[in-house]
Image 1 (cartoon, rainbow over the protein chains, first blue to last red):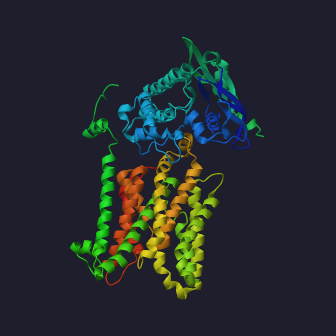
Image 2: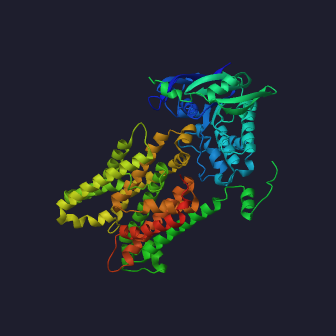
Image 3: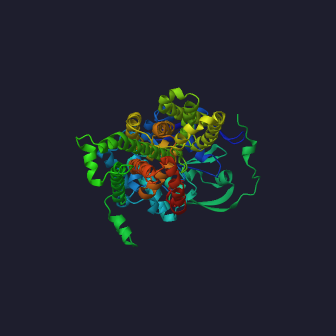
Length: 273
Length: 352
């Protein structure tokens, strides 16, 4: 397996007891991965470190074998991009305008997109089923359509790696599935490596090749969904009890209650060096 | 891809069927209207004054070969002053539009980044303490503006520029420079008279020498702002998304601020501290055409040009026998108009 994205011993400190340290992880080419974990477990921080939005204090991120902090911004943006969690809903843009920005990594500072770039923009719009809506303002779209528009912008960058921070939050169930199936399609048909933070454990299980579970800034479990979802897993990661059954080879979990145990966060025991 | 299940209004149908951005037409119409208004401002500015020239004779006064009094008035006084006013307005408006985008703050204008305070302080010192170097005033004011802005920029720098920190640093430095300026004016209170018209901003007595100072700067600045359009639009997406599409946010921000300072500095160096144009004009234009800098920037330039040139004509001719500095008139119109926008239209401000 080819590792397209490798994080090697990253460290990032918020406060003296709240930090990520010695964090290493790698992603294979063409993989679809979900990172799960409770609020404050460091998922979004890890995504930001991977995408150089946050600067790691130690360690290195290797993107397709190159050290990311020695690469040019535009070269990175051609290979990897992210859809951040909360996007500005008030942007006064049409869908096509937004998607056009996705071509920026291929343009010099003074260049405007030409016909060659338009083919990619048209492609991104059609993959996300937005061709008919391309001249509508973003504000006139539903939540699901808007999320597809942002995804369209990201894939107009033709990245090899697409990272998404909670792409389905705030969407109703059918729009959630729409987004997940779009991502699955991008993964299957184009071999795009997809890394996402998800909160819905069943969606994570259904659509991922690998689950990475985080707690207190560390990876506590990872593997195929059916291998990691078990009683111990839910107790350890989320402090819940859950019953798990299989639908085909995909596990489905139903939470049945909280685990009453010492819930004091382990953050407080941690020492950040 | 089936047809949408229900379509509510005709507008929806229009939007669905449109082959282009539905706002395109309106944007081009606005562009055209302001272009027309600039033309009208020029013709009107040539016509009125202590010697009024009827519309029929404007062409003759401009281009006849005979050396008439009218021709002298137009060529020596009115035309250069109008052209200077047009450039001053365009520079200020573009500067304000860029700053509002870069700072992502609706109150950003050339004043907030120190242009006015820096230029003002240098101008006051030169006019009051070193009047023998008065011919260097435009250069001094321009440098003062640049230095003040850089000071604010570097004070606000902390591994990167946060727009909010820059605005706060701007407020602090502005008041500091203001205090120094007041001190100078109190110490030399007998000479303050000479400075006041410059401080409120005006175009009285501006002629070809001033036009020759501003046009190269204005030309360079306005041409460069064409290249700023793409960067300003990407910055609207927010710092994170801008970086994710490969934009070097800090570098873009630095150059946009530099460009805005350059433009505003050029304007104040010939016209003094004209306020409100950089603040109000971009807001007004934004309400009509939206945030897209491909339209916002050129239309703001035209609207600012029209406003300053026309207001200056009004200021020098409607209040006969006194000639108001245009800065006073602009502030007098600008403040209430801004409040009106605030009450009625600030929801048209579409940046969070």
